Image 1 (cartoon, one colour):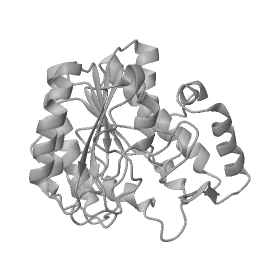
Image 2 (cartoon, rainbow, N blue to C red):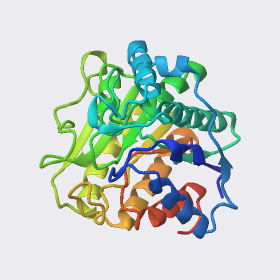
Image 3 (tube, one colour):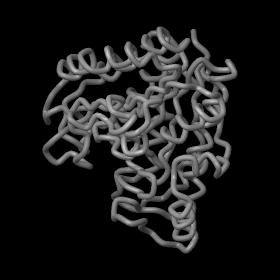
Length: 318
């Protein structure tokens, strides 16, 4: 059994997105319920969040953007730039706790206290750009963690895998010119899939050319197409890149029962993806892997998806 961290903090529930918003606090409660009912709490290292030092957020996000987010939040504004980005007076602080919890997980893995971790955080992050909140996201948790690993631990190559059904435009935007971070995303495109980015010809630019890889998937595809594209695109990319740490933007919204997109993945496909990612982590970076929650909005499926996700990290039978 591996030493697996599970970041869950009830303060993440304080981020109130208002009625009828899909990114609701009940998502985390469903995840915790699944982990608890699966008998996994006794096996994981459960830890709570610490507030992030602003200098790490400023390593990714524009200072003026951070200040504007803080100012509008504490002024009681309910929307930040776009109608999708609903917030309350606790949102800024909760976003700091989300980043801080992920960075704490990174410290624990780098010190050897943990082999890997699953960070059940909110708000999510992969749509947040350098100076723009988008798609329920304010701070890009996964991108900040990548920069943190590089700056604090001098890692030269960080691999990011994003299997949320929506393209992580923010993460790609942040690293598109950077050859030290490889960003891979498999997501729905085209149709009505948000945000409309992530096409195959988007492969990075400048020094980062060739270090971005997108596998767009047509609507209504199922497990076999994900298997095919991941084997075709991700496996050879990481074999060449040889990451020293793998970060996973874990969105569960490509599930066939999730109404936020038009994909037909089974629960078993998410397990297959995580098993392959753990194999890559064991092969390339001594098992060092952190997954961070992004999307996933079907409250009936989140318990089983989270339970299986953690069981794979622990190396336990599902």
